[in-house]
Amino acid sequence: MSVPDNDYNDDELVPPVWLDKVFITEALKGYQAEPELQVIEVIFSPATAKGDHYASIMFRAKVRYSTPRQGEQTTSLIIKTMPEAEGHKKDMIEGSPIFETEVGMYVKVLPELERILRQAGDHTKLYVECIYHTMDPHEVLIFKDLVDMGYFVPRDRGITETEIRRAYFKLAKLHAASLKVQNESPQMLKSFTHGLFEMPHIMKEPFLKTGMVFFVELLGSEPELNKYKSYFESIGENFLERLVVEWKQFRNNPNTDPYTTLCHGDFHLRNMMFKYENESFEDVMLLDFQISNVFPLTIDLVYSIYMLMEPEFRWNHSEDLINYYYSVFEETLEKIGYKGVVPTRAGLWQRMKQHKYYEFFLLTTFLPFIWALKDNSTDFGDILQNEEKRRMCSFSEGYIKDVKILLARMDNLGYFKET
Image 1: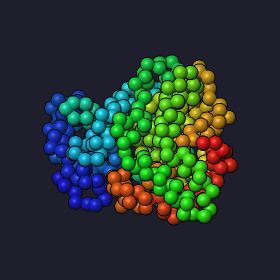
Image 2: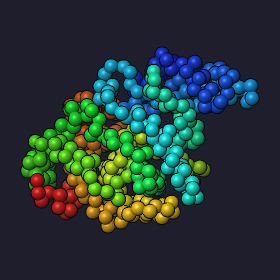
Image 3: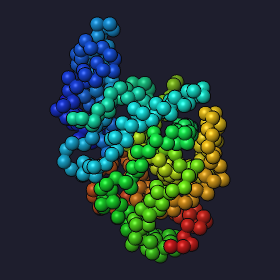
Image 4: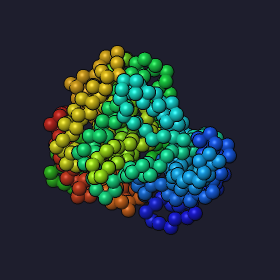
């Protein structure tokens, strides 16, 4: 079934030939342990809007089926698979273990983290149920549809403070429970070492190289920002090398680090869905664990400041919000009986400042995209592949205002004192 709508990604308008009634039947038979289950009808459609994600293909399946025991039933499923069509998306993620990572998270790690919380009397839900997964012949995950449960992605507005706090609440629970696993059963997380910069082809992507170039150009064009130009010019020539060195220092740190735990890896607004009941906020569900990896937990927090918060929170309330995260994190560690060295609030803030080049990367390369994606018609794939569109992102009015405030803050923190 095709859906001729420009609001969706082109590769999600028509499902692949193998994704059919037979495939859905076998998946539901296994999940429900009903060998005589029969699928009567399946209607496929795109599961997400353009710009919601990029490194996967997602479909929604409205399924009508019957079983001898239950009679006729309906359900809605979300099918996630890897790109098969030749093109930039497939090339960028080829050879990357992101699908194996996500399967491992949903099948093994997230259930264990919830078990740890439940054992302590904490019934926080960390993930949506995965009803089926396979790696061969196609890489597929099938989930229950959160939309059917009342969840939604906010598209026509920014995230509220209540929503941010609940997202941090969930992240703190995930970090705390995985810190207990890391301390007591580190083998479970040993394979989760592939973050963004471990993707095999990522460093060849042009968007990584042009972000700093456009940023220096912006600094030269704005009188208020001229004073920062020489610093960024001085690091611009080998910026990516500095960034990777900084990343590898954390990744390969031989010392036991009490702040190292399982990170979400891509903690931004489009990777979460919210639920309200009678106009009262009820819950947020975290999604997309494709690049979850063991790293200092501050990497998720730094990322969230640029990729989750609306500008007013980034400018005025980020410290309060991170402190809220820490209070939940600390309380959860105590509740679940964590026996390792407990990270301190002061240590957390000290380490927040140790990701300097990663912050520069977010500021110069990803933050312009966030501003562009505020227009829901923007195609993220086009931005990644089109240099002129990326350049336009770096000169938007909202982004420039953001940069002025963020650079002044970095200056006060001493980011520019040495190269």
